Image (cartoon, rainbow, N blue to C red; front, top):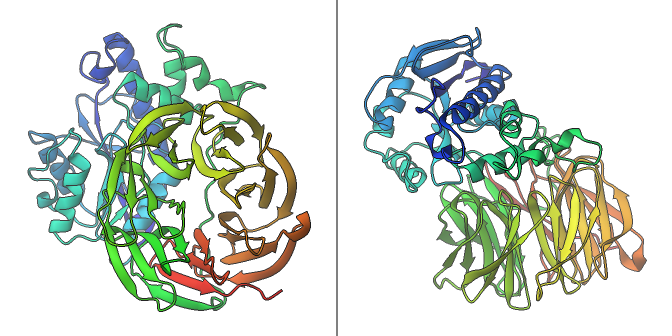
Length: 535
């Protein structure tokens, strides 16, 4: 099935005052809420229009107008509850199709294309895009099936979980898409405008009366000379097909998407996040044997192992929680966090979780959040080193450091072209500058200071450090390679370039041997082990 064989359905309401975005009233008047709804629809339709698809269909509650572009077919919604209307939309349009709502103006053709590509993969029956409030912003089906929706509770905190359960019950192989925040409240509006400052929605929000929206001026800040850089955060490249055999050995084939990986030298276990099933999967790094699958409430993309022997810190993004998972099989602990927890680190008995869509760090002690710290936009990378917490804010391209006791910001520094991840060796910080094709090294105290930049063409993304051998590794997602760099003596030196599995988004190092373990994000979900250079 090709991408162009997929239809995209937009389920929407006519933007009439009093019928749309009612949770924005107050503080907005009904007429203002309707203008916000109209801007959301316009952004969504523009994203769909910019995507290569078979058909573009608006399934509408209300009257059509010139606000719907000519490229779209329009059919009326039918059915009672939302579950019935979703089922009817798929039946009327046919499959394969992806359905989106009108509440995510930050949707882009790239995000939509990723969903279309996923639905077109062999063996995939459905795709599901989690929303941060417990619902979902997109669902795609290879073929219509009313059983997918019948009786699933809609517009409640359990909607996503119940929809996942129904897809599993029907035996439909489902790929989970990236989470998005949908627009329900004025807080959602502010957050989305900051994330997508050049949308029609952000402009409409900024046009609301001053004082009504404290963050409205920020929504268009990207147009000014002194504004923070609010381009979309850097992402890994879509890796090409393999052109050479991966180095080392394939430890295990997990037959699912894999992202997020840590290796524990004490237990000899690698822990990886898998999507089918949604679990923390434990693999013996010496034998390649799967030893356990620890269920997770949702997927994530980063793991942290604060101390040898565990436990593992697992931010579960769409579930807005941190799971603390022991490696010995004992019970996990789940702690609520801020929106879209993406990375975590522990220092001095406290855990700091980067809430990427909340622009905060959640500070956890004694099993609960005790405080939050405001950060630059999109704290996507978090690490502990030099007695400080270091954060990479991926939207503002900033490295910020914080005192773990006082929770005060120490300093911030503009870094790279498009940084994504940070790791430390206990003192120095190492950053993958994904858009800048470089690995950056920093002193973290007393203030962040760039020590060196090492060219790493190929869209570096995953990064790991070996403090004992003073080596840093990074995966190159555009070339299916990994670079092994020595920083002994304070000067970076390339030791080796290794061939990897396809789409090598995640890497960690075996503390005992110095070998690299790399996870292939896409099917068949292999873990690869590469011996470190003897130099």
